Length: 398
Image 1 (cartoon, rainbow, N blue to C red):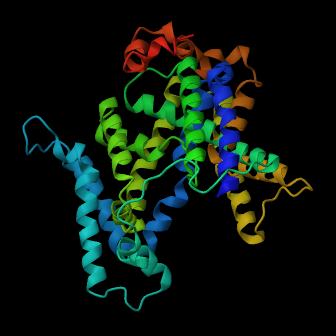
Image 2 (cartoon, one colour):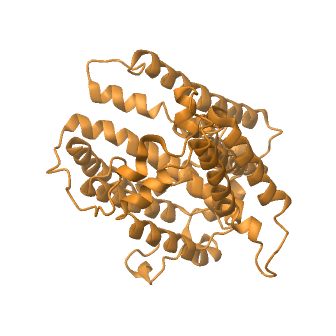
């Protein structure tokens, strides 16, 4: 834990520098609707192993959850029990999860999984490992709770690969969130600002002894599309609730007892929404162009198949395909090529900026895209991307 803390603290500098130096914003000039379509699509499709593969481990819980989510969010979304609020559309998750959770608890209490396979018990039971009983009532997180962090250059470079992957995946999620919120595409300054703040979050994670760093929640991006709620107040209020309840161990254990197939059924919908948003960028391009078809198809296919190869290789041999005498170099490349959005971005951006670039500006969707590169390129940017509490005076648009 001390080694992880040290690696996270030092590697967070990569995102902080890329963000606040505007380097990531400058790099975004190579993005286009054609290049972003497979990247954003792979942000959703790249998580397919968290979808029906996990639902299938407990179909009697996962399938009903999936069906109820579809029923409430699509078929009953216009039913209003309260005149001004579409309850089933806004609160789909809050309605579905407790219902299926109680149903799963009834099955568990009735002994439905008493003599079943271990995987079935781990996936279906709501009382596994007696989480709630073993959790403390109160536990306050505090900095350096595992002791003084240890710093190692190899660990830092290996962790930087995860930070770089997080940067690319977050960029795709930013683009998806803007589309689902019916906002303008985030300009270069906003992309850099978001990445910089994310780096600060990872540094705080390391200081507080978190096992993982902070990144964009793809689930929340999909939830934005499912509920049609894109208010900052909702996000701020939710963050306050998470901070408050983080000190109550029983509360976290209660949610940890929710069977995984319930989440997996939600992921099928939420990740699917994010993937479809990525494909929607293709409407701004000319898909009658063989060049565009080639880039899109190759980016999507390699973005799925290359990480699959790296992940399967790691499962069978306990180390990645890249095997040199340098451990940090192996970890760096194996992590980079295990991320679908990262592979998709490398393939799509390189091909899009090297194959008939000047002749294909209109086919790539650049006339529509170019005006959103700068903060003042569209009057609506100020409405969508101005920081709350007058924080823009400390982080002025550049």
